[in-house]
Length: 142
Image 1 (tube, rainbow, N blue to C red):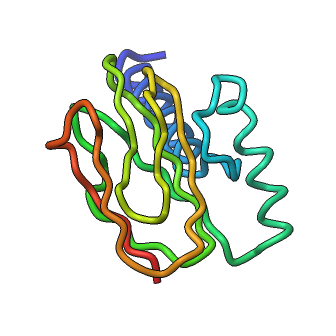
Image 2 (cartoon, helix red, strand yellow):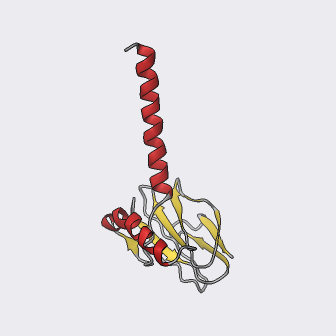
């Protein structure tokens, strides 16, 4: 093959891998616990999400990354019954903490550890990281 064809094929493969990775990250799990998830739990999330979808077709799972000392996205709008999964991508430990009645309290999350919470009450819920209180975000539940 020519060099141009090899380069084109390589670029195609890289974009396919990135696309599949993005899809897998966006379609992440549905464990209803509010405890930090182990690595094994993270691996089983997609399987659990498929089972939950059968039970409640209207609920969705949203992912929030903790990266570069920030929550992303900073504001998330969801519906009652939806689940949010936070995953710490930083090498330092963070928390997902709220002073409101929704009870967000992840405890310390190490790198690649996750925490999930299902929101069953409408309202606006602000949360932060205890060791880094300047890290703030909010979830709006319709």
